[in-house]
Image (tube, rainbow, N blue to C red; front, side, top):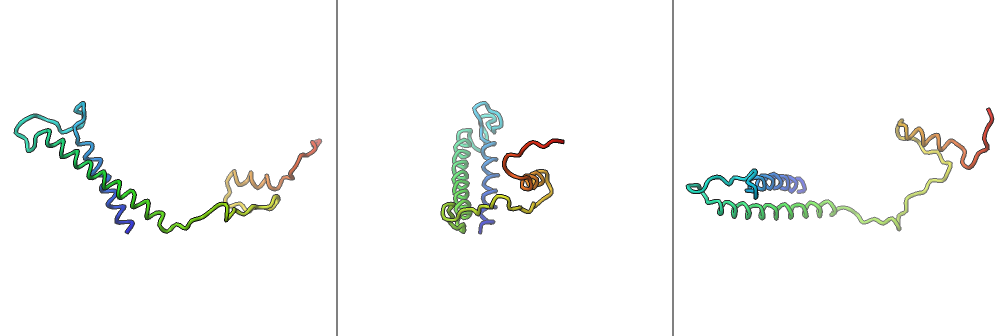
Amino acid sequence: METVIIVIHLMLVAVLIAVVLVQKSEGGGLGIGGGGGGGFMSSRGTANLLTRTTAIVAGGFFITSLLLSWLANYDRAPSSIINNPAPISQPGTPVAPTGGGVLDTLKQQEQQAPSGPQAPRSQ
């Protein structure tokens, strides 16, 4: 179900982008304005059709966006930080590193080093 809605949503996105780019801008940039008479539709009729199409496609985009967000949260169980606090590790308890990166090496060295202030050592 979710996959079908995502496909519809992506098709609406493509159509919405195309319809917005086809519209005549104030400066006449990417628009289809063109010459006056003899066309299939007048420029006013084309503008009304594109405006109406944009509104319908934008409404469909809005509805599918809301539906997808509702479906994403539908199966999620409520959780609370207050009721289920994260376990706190005791100081000095070694944590097994998950990788071999620089941060893991520094963390391991930090855990092995004695805590608290230390007296300077002579060499």
